Amino acid sequence: MKAWAALYAKGLAMGLADLVPGVSGGTIALISGIYDELVETIAGLDHRLPGTLRERGLRGTWEQANLGFLAVLLAGILTSVIGFAGVLHWLLANRPVQLWAFFFGLVAASVPLVGRRVAERRAGLWALGAAGAVLAGAVTALPPLVRSDAPLFLAAAAAVAACAMILPGISGSFILLILGAYAPVIGALQGLDAIRLLAVALGVAAGLLGFSRVLRRLLARRRAATLSLLTGFLLGSLNALWPWKDRVRELYTHSGGRVEWLMENRWPASPGEIWPAAGLMLLGAAAVLAIDRAARTRDLHGK
Picture 1 (cartoon, helix red, strand yellow):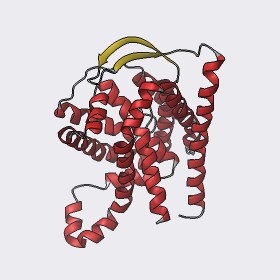
Picture 2 (spheres, helix red, strand yellow; picture 1 turned 60 degrees about the horizontal axis):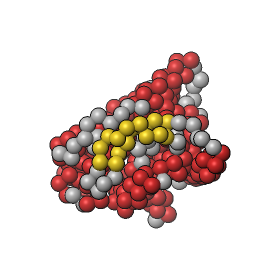
Picture 3 (cartoon, one colour; picture 1 turned 90 degrees about the horizontal axis):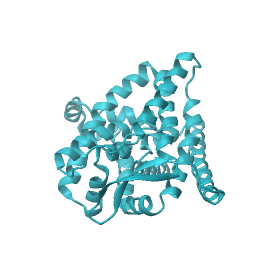
Picture 4 (cartoon, helix red, strand yellow; picture 1 turned 90 degrees about the vertical axis):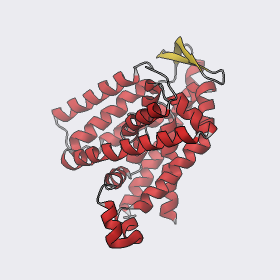
């Protein structure tokens, strides 16, 4: 029960991270020590599953496919998504500097933690890391493109975002924001719109099942190169999480009256702006260091 409770807590953290544009649940999975198991489990949900069900029954299939792990983790993620979507929505609208500062510290502290997992130190791997940072920085600098709440569009956007959800440093919610689907998805969560939520769920499932196989192959055959690229993604994603931003132009107005703006990064204007945000950055960094320490302790004791 202790292990399941810890896994559920990691799911809660992943769900909270995925709600914030610029933060990836994959980052939490990686630093908490469950990333490889997560990718392997999702990738294992393939066409052979019905055959396993016929041969081994429900219990045997549940154990072989590691569905207990996935069920507990998903329970935590869904608890966060359903229970905290409104809170995160309010914080993004009313306390963006504080929210982004916390996650900036969290992701910044994650960069060296992920980077140390790269066993080799070759020039090619450094180049891959730099390329990942440039790519993530470019993606997070893109303005929102379109906006629609059509179920088919939301399913397609969710499939693309799901690929990013399991990539540390590439935020699924930020991809939704770029595609113009973030506000409609948050609105569907708040209003419990069954049709649109089903479309999003189907899109996420399709994206995860397809991309996890690619990621599993890369981790198995080119682990050092893949981890170098992921470290670069984390570094480049800090561009989206820089706490201090200016409004450039109005993009659109939500049905509730909240205005969505195109933002650009700026330097803090005074020391009074820096210190509260710096404290929250340190809090975010402390949180990720605590997660990493707990994961290493678990590995040390073989649990």
